[in-house]
Length: 484
Image (tube, rainbow, N blue to C red):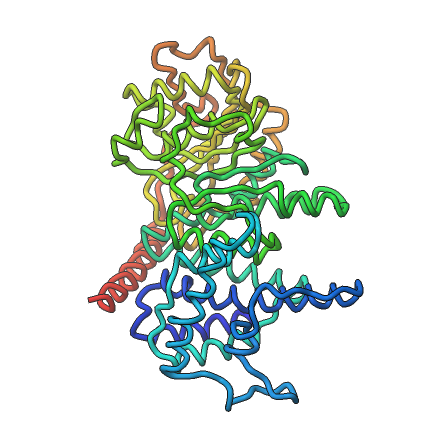
């Protein structure tokens, strides 16, 4: 049901002059879904209060509730065409009354960890781009038929929302920063193995995939007590995100997965001087895929002891600093980090190896991140004691990864099994730090157990990938034409 609803919404947005790209599609869908979710959330709270013999105090004033402006009903429960806004009346209400009202929640909320604050922050970060009031009316009618009441409904909706994020991530470079393959995230979470009561942090939160999967992992880790549920809701998951759209999507994604008021802050993580981080600011676990790329401004670099224009290297310094002693991390980074000879790379490897136990490195094949040309590794480390030995695992698959052949959890099963004992195999080996060059700290991935000859790709496979890339190019060009 939800899948067809999403398709119908996309069809309507595709015809609206104000919405030009897939990024716009998910942004505009998100704020409407959020308000419908909020309505169902309040109705559930009202029911719970009534069963407890209490009166529920609504968050949203009557005029701005979903059943008043978005989908008014007759006394018989049918849609009230006489009261429903449409056309220019609807657009004027949304742009000049609804959004300004919702923005005010940010300044009026008692704390950033409340749903009131999240409402205000979300509607301070976006605007309605839908130009046709008739198109918006159509979308509201579709969304009104979507329910967020039962666990199965929420599960289906969250799954489909993840699919939309994935499609957005593959739509273009800007979107690609938001999406990390879920099979990889689940594996990283399994290895780091968080426990209830530990604080989990992602300073480059994107669509909140790491926090969502950590939440799913912890929910299944034991039979939850009332106290456990309270801890997971309010004192476990923390994130920061600089980009407005990613922030909105991350908050929405966590809400749909069951976290009512996500502790995600819209801020530039790298603008924080890491020397200002105190013990009270630290976390037990860091899970992240920081953005790659050079060009960080000099004033931002001044916040770090190791100066570099590479974004991911600054994030890694931040993550090491913000971990508690004994804290654990699983971080995605470019594989060139292990062997680059520039001063920043060497200094950063030295910092990592001397202040943390880098116990595991997972080397991933090309194509793991669809549309990205870089090869990556996962660094697993624990803060507080220097590295003595590092176990490497090189993921060697019999197929080439790409859009039509994505990474899956089965691909990573051997890694998860062997990592527990750090066993040697054709794909894994260990190195002693005393054997590492103490001037360069080179940690290049050189599998001593495997033939390094490259398997040639089949012509059919190459042609299929070219076809997929051509489709993506056509879609990008189509979006560009709309914007011109």
